[in-house]
Length: 232
Image 1 (spheres, one colour):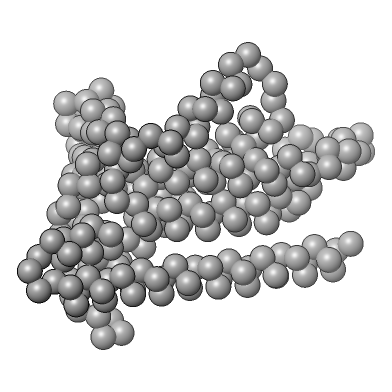
Image 2 (cartoon, one colour; image 1 turned 90 degrees about the horizontal axis):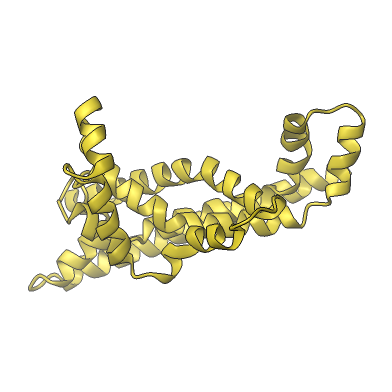
């Protein structure tokens, strides 16, 4: 694969799979959380806001340990999932995706919330007075207007998931071919004698992937702006 070794290819493909799955998992919950924080007023909102952003301020190792307690084979959630569906979460790539999703979630919510707060609610109110349902207003007016914020949130979450290390290694360990993403593979090589060359290659691969993601996001943002300008 483009001159990459089998070791590098496995780490890259696993990282991309984990990052994409984590973003897909985050997206609906991120939209819901952004709407809750931007448009609703209720008792305990500050506490909920702090809880959503907690992964940004606590050490990632703490997040990984809590996930291990919850989703481990003997944990309340992990045990229930294994007993009913036969699926193990800890020490698998699925656990790595969950860890990445938890760490990326606050960045996605923050970007979407800021974008939603900038949407003129008078446009939504006007659409509702014309008979549109709340769901239709959200799908045809709110979502298109906050599309740049959604895009930013997705890119930030993808980049955070791609670089996640602390929570991942604590929750799912560093198992080659199963949970060893690019950061974990780079860490392993950096701890290996004569592994500097491999570590540098993985570092360059990570930079290239991040640059590609940024270029794609910039291209998509311009397309969204052109489309919005054409519809005015």
